[in-house]
Image 1 (cartoon, rainbow, N blue to C red):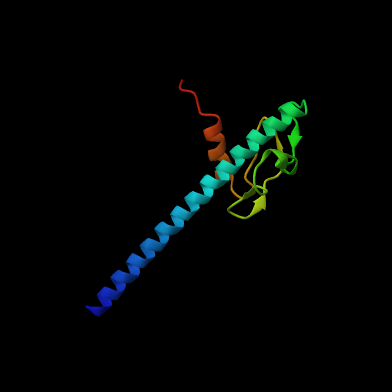
Image 2: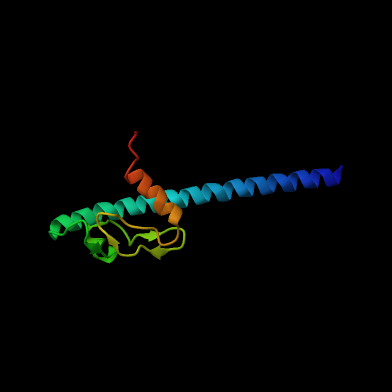
Length: 112
């Protein structure tokens, strides 16, 4: 009976830990997507202010004047976002999945 109790408690602990890790990953993904949205908005302001086209490449370092707070970094790896084509938008330096979800939100597919 005692062994059964220990196994049950251990299994519950593992399930709780896995759920907590999943929730943490979701929060990181949401923050990363929000960061890319902020960078995109800042890049559009930068483009208009400097008479650039959507095909120009911009380094996020140049966007600091348009962003409140500290430099935006991917929360998954604390890596800065790389330079990107303004019209295409930023990419996550740590997760292609983050970039895909950001782009899906940015350009919803039209029904056929």
